[in-house]
Image (cartoon, rainbow, N blue to C red):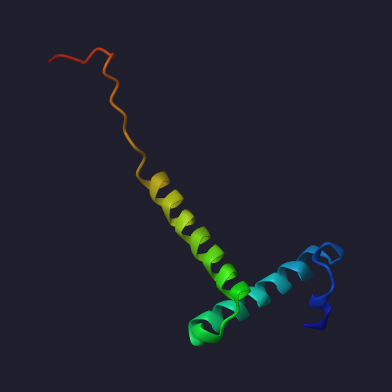
Length: 79
């Protein structure tokens, strides 16, 4: 974990992702287990993850159930 102290831009991609994942996991555990003593950074990271997950659910829902628009100017078929 000591390699995570260097800037992310100087790391290989997989190592940077691993460091970000570990920091996010630590922040989430901190907020869930002891919310009163969690730092503002932990709260911010947890809120960011929550917003991303909500956005992902909305995108999946919209992809599964596309909105059908009714065009008022299009002629309607008559039986």
